[in-house]
Image 1 (cartoon, rainbow, N blue to C red):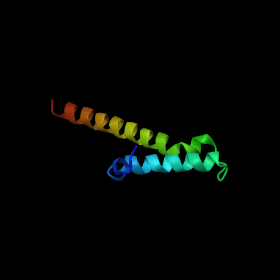
Image 2 (image 1 turned 30 degrees about the vertical axis):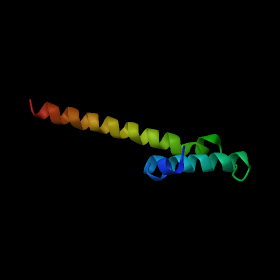
Image 3 (image 1 turned 90 degrees about the horizontal axis):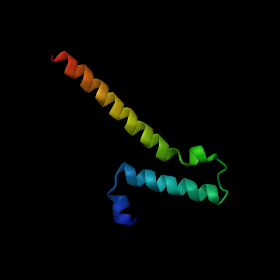
Length: 68
C-alpha cells in the first residue's frame, strides 16, 4: 500500500489507516481494548455496506412491485 492509494482512497484509505493505527496501539500495549473494538473500522464499514445493499434491494422490490 503506497501513500497515493491511501490519499486517493477516500473512506477506504482512512478506515485502513485507522485500523492499522488501532492494531499498532493494541500490540504496543497503549490501548487495552478488545480485538472487536480494535477491528471495528473493518466490521462497521462492512456492516454498513451490507445494510445499504439490503435497503436498496428492499426499496427496489417495493418500487418494482408498485409499477406492475
